[in-house]
Amino acid sequence: MDIQEYIESGILEEYALGVLGEVERAEVERIAREHPVVDQELKEIVSGLDAYAEAHAVTPPAALRERVLAAWEQSIRPGQAPANPAAPAETPVVALPRMVASSAPEPAAAATAASEAVVRQMPVPGSGRRWMIAASVALLVLSGLGNYLLYNRLKETEANLQVAQTEQSRYAATQKAALNERDQQLAVLRNEAFQPVDLKGTPKAPEALARVYYNARTKAVYVDVRNLPALPEGKQYQLWALDNGKPVDAGMLADATASGDSIQQMKNIASAQAFAMTVEDIGGVESPTMSTLTVIGNI
Image (cartoon, rainbow, N blue to C red; front, side, top):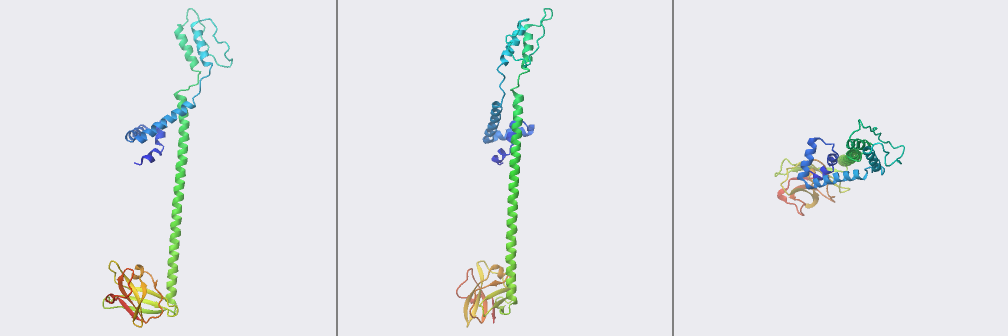
């Protein structure tokens, strides 16, 4: 489990606000017991909500104490006016029953009833108001969490779109390069200035076949493999031009060329009467290994 991701999921805030079911609350408590960092984060969230509620609690009016004391004195001294007659006229005052000797309640009971009546008019600074504040905080937290998740999803969608566009551009560039290469190869095949030279297999590889296109004017050389044996590990085909019997390096064949997937432009050759291929170490050699001669053909 990714603890940081769990903490940032918002479930700890929902636990602190009391909006989780019993099963979910038990799961949060289990994870908090197993992971001290989760337990510490949960305690900080609960402490923060309590501090917020404390900071926004409503302080009772200063005259409330005198009103309660006046009601108490009225209840224990029947027939006398309250000790604080200067209370504002618009402030609701509990109407006490007229005391008569035959039906007067016990002083303690009357005082309790009067006190309860006054207390009912007090603002409730306790759990009810705290839960109202907590609910407001919960809505704010959930709204922020929703915006955060929506923002992350939007960023993820934008990132995926950018990746898709990059891949599409890369694919388009690859296709364009392939088409350009094919067009170039087709131009070579159709250009009468290029003389085709068939290279046929030697007794070592009788089924081998390749073709060289040589332009004596521009000195350009292209090779087109029809069929060549698979190479051993660490080996590569090398093309040679034979000029008056002397071998001249014409370049190394790429794997795609050797497998017949493409036509490859080789090194320019000033003069040649024949072409041949040998199997050499990767990177090539200065002089051909005649024992690995695979194909050869005269112009």
